[in-house]
Image 1: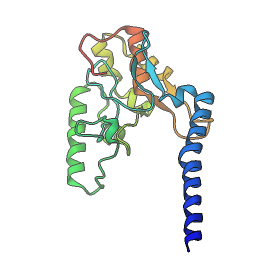
Image 2: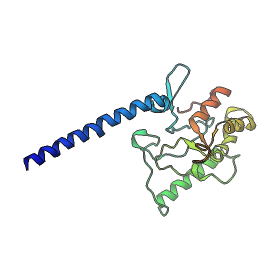
Image 3: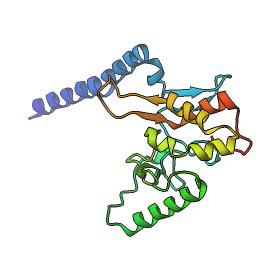
Image 4: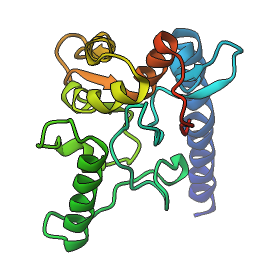
Length: 200
């Protein structure tokens, strides 16, 4: 019995060492060499090398001169990377219905020149609450508000959105999408920052 116990203990220690320490270190090392930007968190840096955010995590933008991402249920105020998760509200939830109705009303009030039909993604949260992407339609729906706030023609803002569309992975996987942070940074590069303070 004692011999079996010692053998089990040795196997457990070796397995923990291999799968809990050696394998993660090897995978991390390979990732840092092969994909340094991704392994480092896909950080977006400003001209001085300071991080502005990550390509992988949404952040809230409240200024009318910026495109807004999907709503977030991550944390009390949303967009909290330490509290990633959806609202877990089902399709029959009155709370979800009320929240969606409030979002639609807010979006229509803030985007009076936009089409009447609000894209569903601008009203609903993603499963993580931190999805950094919108569909091209979700971004284009906001063009009139952003153009008016920046004093720039809608066609020019639309062109920035269209230039920011990312295609399917390997030409097959996923859907075309727009990274909201990268889109807003493109606007700042081309037209300068809007006058009103924006959350970044």
